[in-house]
Amino acid sequence: MAAPRERIVLAVLLAPATLILGVFFLLPLLIVALFSVLMPGLYGGVEWAFYHWNYGRIFGWADGLMEIFEPIYLQILLRSLGFATLTVLLCLILCYPVAFWMSRLPERWRLLFLFLVTLPFFSSLIVRLYAWLLILRPSGLLNQGLLALGVVDAPLDILYTPAAVVLGMVYIMVPFMFLPLFAAVDNLDRSLVEASFDLGATRAQTFRKVILPQTLPGIVAGSVIVFIPSVGNFIVPDILGGAKGLMMGNLIEQQFLSARNWPFGSALAMVVMSVVLMVLLTMVARSRRVRG
Amino acid sequence: MIARLAGLAFLASTTALAAQDAGTLALYNWGDYINPEVLQRFTEETGIEVTLDTYSSNEEMLAKIQAGATGYDIVFPSVHMQDIMLQLGLLERTGINESPSFANIDPAFLRSSQDPNGEYCLPYAWGTVGIYYNEDVTGPIAGWEDFFAIPERTGGKISLLDDMREVMAIGLIMTGASVNSADPAEIQAATDYILSHKEDVTAFTYESMALMSSGDLAAAHFFVGGNVFFTETPNIKYVIPAEGGTMYQENICVLASAPNKEAAMRFLEFYLQPEIAALNVAQQFNGTPNVPANELTPEFIQGNPNINVPPETMERLQIFEDLGAALRAYDRAWNTIRTVQ
Image (cartoon, rainbow over all chains, first blue to last red; front, side, top):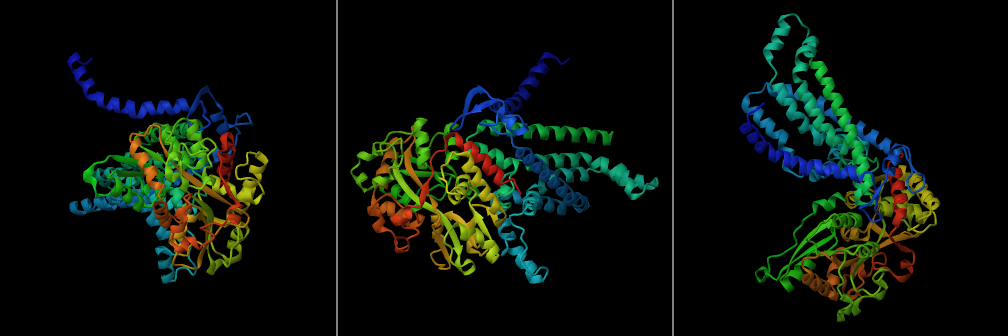
């Protein structure tokens, strides 16, 4: 038990963080949770009456009159999770080797490359996505290049396809994967790798038993940071996907900004948060087991 | 809608006469829906500094005002949203209809059922939503049937607006229903019509005008205002669909919570002047309810029957009304349209 004086100091030091989390995270979360079981107001807002159909619409109980169950919401959720998973995997495949390569560079080169990785943050996300629109369109830079090189005979239809959405998501998320991954790889104890080889381990064994467990915290951190915003992203599917494949983020945004159905939007948000939380807990539990 | 975000918090004030410090005025308008020169002229004449924030749908504006966004003086709701806002008590009575210049306004544009005499809001502008097509690729296009046939006939790409009401309106028009139908069977038929053409539609997007210019789209569903990009390109034409189209009208309203009501009132008076309404049309390429202003617009606009719409074309235009609870059915249909492959 800490001395009373120390406990006061601790309380004072923790107060700002607690206050900020409470006011800007916990309180809004509670409001969302509350709204998700209230009745939608005709012109937005909520009516103060308990209303479970918001969840019924998603999971299969609905009155069939005002609220109709449709499996498309679960379909949209699955699609969003699938895209997010794909984004995480592609980011990982892209970043993992590069992190190793960069950790071997001389100090000043490393700093330069680290700066380059963060460079995209200097301009607006929306502007950068518009640049991709210009690059990917049939008459855009990519197709002009491919045509000039004779790789293709006719412009490729990439813009407004799921491929364009994945490309845009990976493009946005790569820095978020790279930075934690690089930190982990950079801290890798190379003497352990050498020891592993000296003791007769194969390359695969060394990777599995020495390198992977040591870089796992970086992989998990990067995956989590990429996965969460990817599930809720609605700008990329809008701009590069042509709004043809609805994602969870679009659906939630639409409930607030055009369908005037705040409770249903809140219910969808709660479902997404629960699923993300479950995925995270599973991942963390699993990474513990691998390391243990 | 994203393009609109880029213009968010765009500051339209000028330095001229700023020293007078006659106050400020905060506008909350649709993206790209007012000529910046109009705001500049207002500041020059009155000394009032103007700020402009933008939104991309009536519902977005309503949601923000309802959620307690304060500091805005003037909003530009569509007619049906003005009715809702009046019922919710969000608007201020201005008595703008008592202004002598109010005689400039064609009474046909006093469409609000809650404000039939214009005691609250000033009719601002109106326009049509139709089809842009690249005639070199598509040949002549008369309406929706021709439009949806373009991909198969020519290999060209077509886009629709990323807008629930506008897309559903096409389905409703093509199945012979009102664009405000609340009948589940009619809504279903409209949904099926759109779904039967989904494969032909490259994208639901607001960015179609740039892709029309670059030749990446052969035709696009867009607002009349898009004509501003095609005054020098005779091959790109705009048509109000033969089967029927939609029209929109927005009004200038003062919020009950407006901090600068006096400045807001001066803006309404200012906008009643025909030359100001015409100045806006010259950049917006839409219609104005200000009758004398129609004589002052540029020739490209006055002489084009698809922009300066004659009465017989007006007859095939429908305007959106509030759907009330039926909005739920439209939302479900719109989700289905964008999920079913």
